[in-house]
Image (cartoon, rainbow, N blue to C red; front, side):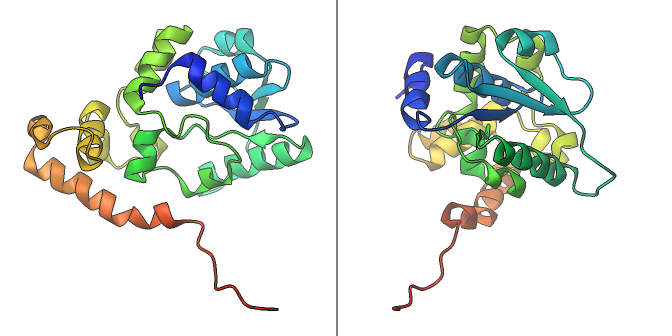
Amino acid sequence: MTASISTIVQAIRNAAAGANGLLVPVSGGSDSALCFWLCSQAFPRKTVAVHAGSSLREEAWFRATGPLELVDTPGEHLEREEMRWARFLAAALAGSAWLVGSRNRTEDELGTYSLASRVATYLPIVGVWKSDVQRLCVEAGVPASIIASSLRADPDCGRPSELAEIPFEDIETLLRVRAGEMPDASLSRLSPAQRDYLDAILARNAFKKRLPTRGPAFER
């Protein structure tokens, strides 16, 4: 089923009705912008965006959408993203809020999301393909500069350069073929080397679909 704004907003209302608040980390990219906008449509009084840093792309748009907090990531750390998420998690716990992650289905299927993002309490667009994210951003009025920033994977966000060079549409096509949603002929735009590279990522990250793992149940 093709994702629509109305169905996602209603799904958020149903899923997060019991949440005291929704804290949405935003990066200035299309996924987090869409998550913030959708959550603000569903629960305008209890949705807050948070950004780690002193500046945010199209900050005025975010502030027009809903409350926005800018926080610093303390100190110097090798694992900058992990420290950002630690800060977000602490803020969510302090406010008894749900921490909203912006992982989409393309990232979820490929397994290329950060381990740190698993601390998110709620993933409202985890079932939405990246192409639908871009379309929904246009419908929601997300600024063009935010939408354009997500056309390719960003190596500065931890993506290998080989992955960043493959357009997300082609990555999504392979994932949809492997999921049985599209025919094998759709892979013609990808070179054999690119197919092998993406299939290797799928195989390497398959374990993430089984997380969290649970130990054996012992009788008391």
